[in-house]
Length: 314
Image (tube, rainbow, N blue to C red; front, side, top):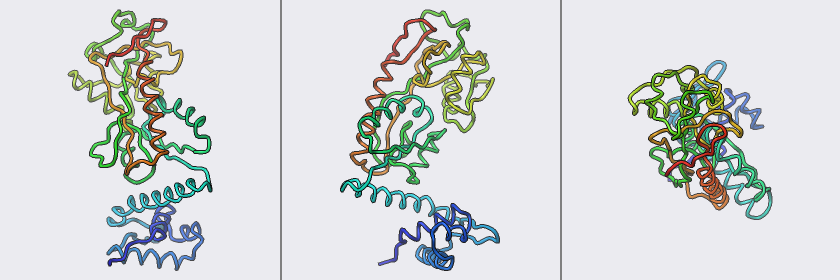
């Protein structure tokens, strides 16, 4: 039977890459540099080619090394979770759940879930990883950086996926905008085609969404300003810099701007996904998320300040 890499060898490879040198990696791992080099050579022999290029002052991954590294990280993460699950089962230590999300989730549905989780499971810590784009979230999940990913439907995902609910988007305008008093509390994107928008930074996934829905409406949105953080967009729009398209459930309390429903509505499905069948701890967390998503959907505020909010259709 062909030899397979050991977890120790994979840990050595990842540490060399993360520290940028064999010397620093040996210090972090508390091994001698010759022993570290021997294990890396053994790993390269097992995998059939060099993984690292030794430079005078650093190391560089070879093409094979770049292909192997994400799988090495995922294997180490899975081994760590296996140990953690086993120890929790016999009561030896408290647990930890690693959750990866896109920004809009961490601003909207997640905070009340974390409050409930802390009350229900005080011994289980949540480690949160946030990503500005759904593609980067999916890459992180593929690399084994979290137990569960929360975001839009992942393209081509082969593991389990659970739909949580619908993320509804709203148009934000300042309180003194000419459209503030329209009786329908809705607006067509074409009515805003000639305006400069509060857009998003190119690496924020909502920039792609705004460009896409505006293109469907027949125009390209001009940017008055680009927000790096999703949470800044409604504040900038409320200050009069331009309309903004934002997830309705991230609007801060007592917001003094105007919220209008896009006509037709703009929505995207939120999901929770894992690489393998989720364990009971992950399932319990996702159940809380799904409950909160339904609550948020029922409470979405739409309308001008002081006006009774209208619930979105669908």
